[in-house]
Image (tube, rainbow, N blue to C red; front, side, top):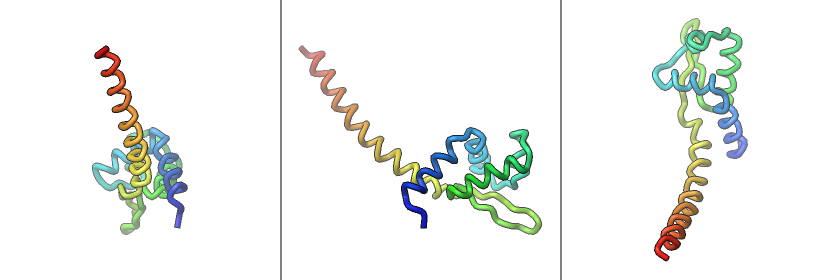
Length: 110
């Protein structure tokens, strides 16, 4: 079992690359082979496969063998680590910004 912080690191690393984000966007529309993911990106199958491997390691997608093809399937559950991290800091900053807003309003009343 991968520790939560390590899983989060893998997800953030995977999402740091714009090519992988484009692949995720495409997979959110439908399942694709690696070749179908590579085509609009004008990249080799080997290059696309490396990106898919990073996404797979992060738990964002899985590859499933169907006949002679391997199909990539998005697993949004892999993004839970990122969502939880963002939510934790979002609550922190919301509270800080509300305090700042109150302070500014009080200064404006004087």
